Length: 321
Image 1 (cartoon, rainbow, N blue to C red):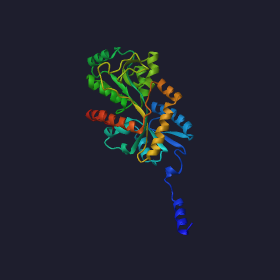
Image 2 (cartoon, rainbow, N blue to C red):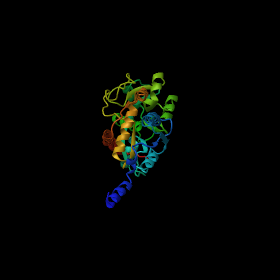
Image 3 (spheres, rainbow, N blue to C red):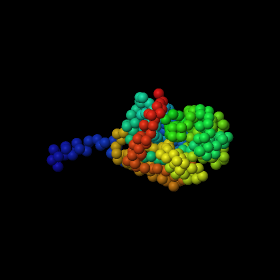
Image 4 (cartoon, helix red, strand yellow):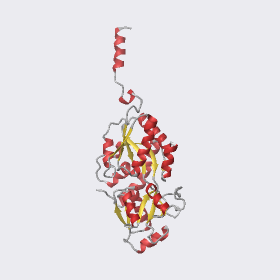
């Protein structure tokens, strides 16, 4: 080999490869950030899927809770992380869409989060304490209209899906019910059980045991069709309130500039973990609906959610600052 050719070949071998191309992804532990405290629905779903993901890819998947300010703390942290697929986030509509209307200024741009997969959705149920003097939605509306402003309903916070669902029903039915904000849906459910509040919108993960024990009464689901886990509870759509289908989701997002091949690999592995028979059985047993979609499908869903709910949030002037 001529000296010039040898030097060219040697130089080409010395050129550094892109960091994500040096080793097949994933080649080290993944940090999975959750914007809610331990013990909640998003945390439980994340830990269940993360355990299976870790088993499948042969790398540790470490769940880190960074709660605060409607997932803003977690979202800001993740958007500032290296876009290499090793820092990921459990994301919901708030961090990805709603916060743009709920806050006048955010410390992060939701566009700096790239969708990976929507894992599950948690259907919502309109529930009352058994002492409430109505057994169906029609009676509920009549009672509330007869005593405007008397009844309170518990929500996990303004701007979350539970809150938007109830505010949408109030607007459609012309109801005057006072929103009482809690730090999560679990304490709201506790006060509903104790009779401190009369009404709430609760996701199936929390409410199913109380419905089955008779400690709470379900009036309707915020869905187009009846839920398989509550077959005796009518959907709002069948009761004449269409386009009221809203539910919290738990999806996965990464920093925007994460390489597309890394996003595709991560999405494929998340989908595989969610659809694992043992994992999916546990999730559906809680009343959750399995989604496990592609980055493109998740992005299309988020776009549709924004078009539906951002104008509603702005029209009602729902603000968090």
